[in-house]
Image 1 (cartoon, protein in one colour):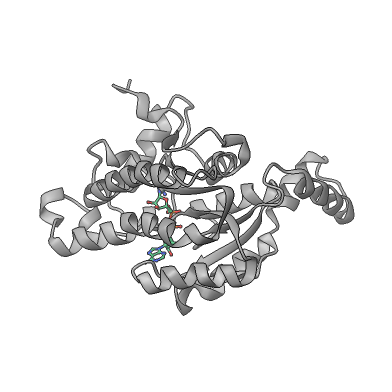
Image 2 (cartoon, protein in one colour):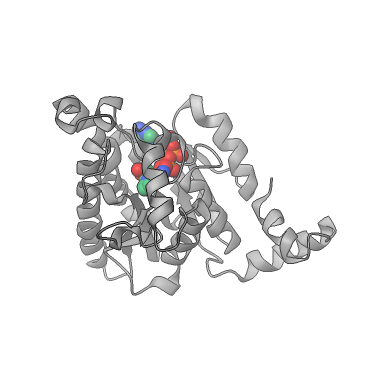
Length: 290
Ligand SMILES: NC(=O)c1ccc[n+]([C@@H]2O[C@H](COP(=O)([O-])OP(=O)(O)OC[C@H]3O[C@@H](n4cnc5c(N)ncnc54)[C@H](O)[C@@H]3O)[C@@H](O)[C@H]2O)c1
């Protein structure tokens, strides 16, 4: 399904002929606030991925998109999803390899020469790190893997991308409240996200020092049922509690996150850097639940 076609189907009363919808889509893509921007989106695994919602919003605002995938096992599904954004720019990158991170940007350079930033929507912990008791699941190996994939990979990608960034480029990552609050089963991922959030601030400092308008930010998203989230014990309970008690009285969607991400990636957000922006319906501000 083309997300633009579907969203505009309702805007024209759901009765428009395909040609009319395509015409309106063309106008939208040509006038969006990301028009002319070339962005790399990582972390698309399914149409429920947060990265998919971000791609939808960035595409709607006129960005040209490239995608990364992780080895042959995800190539076909990511290629199929990339078609929704008229993209055949697909790059293999497992962030556990520095070589693959460097190759990713060298390959993007071959296609685009330079580009306007990327979205890092990548996280992983071995099962023991996101189940049950924190100390029971803790080991050097679990800690190292969770931090390498979920935290180190972001500043590593920032570092590798520097030679290819256009003026006013922006980089963005995804984090979660479990970085700051004891959250059932989030455990070792909480430590990794705390490190990731700190890296956002240091990256913002390093990037800003180039004097080219470069920015780094994170979105702290509320819980959303995705492949990664479903692998965490207690995720269903967290979703229920947050949906019930959030000030907006519902859970956030990948579209909610996507729209904020598109804004942050754009020049409209030129004054925002080193920030953790909460897209969680206000849940993180609560002290007690009634
Ligand atoms: N879903 C939530 O509730 C939630 C809330 C806040 C933050 N986040 C964060 O959002 C980001 C995206 O997760 P999601 O929930 O959309 O789940 P998802 O499963 O759709 O996406 C996770 C992505 O990480 C990628 N990945 C894992 N290991 C990798 C590796 N070694 N190299 C490259 N890519 C790798 C996967 O291929 C996948 O595309 C993660 O950082 C996650 O921690 C998720």
